[in-house]
Length: 141
Image 1 (cartoon, rainbow, N blue to C red):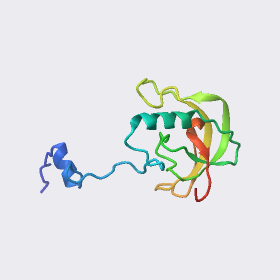
Image 2: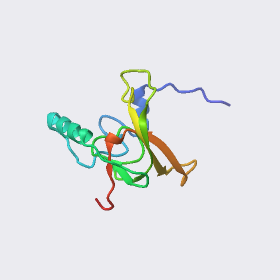
Image 3: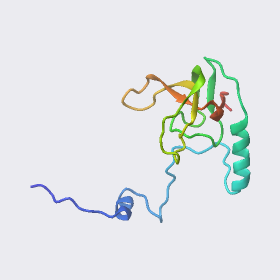
Image 4: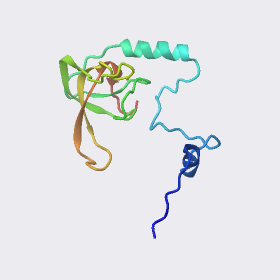
């Protein structure tokens, strides 16, 4: 006999899966490696300075996110990606909502990563990014 579905409030659902105000856990996959917290004005100035700093990349270069400038799920902080292509002119993200962080973002960098989850785990895949958010990757940095 089929059970009648039980309706839960959002608070009850979160508690059932182990999330609550009494037991908070970070929901982000990873955090900026610089660990900057607290002084928002200093963080804004630092992030702006990093964002404005340009790097010249070439196909085959290994790159990683600049601290605090990751706006996509992959690659993770500290994980390298390989430059596949530089796009001139950049492709503009077609997000139509001006409130989106991707609205008209200039995607001028094609990066390759090894997909790390199923399905397709281990496959080489490429994505488009804004090069201002990346720096050269250094092993053990």
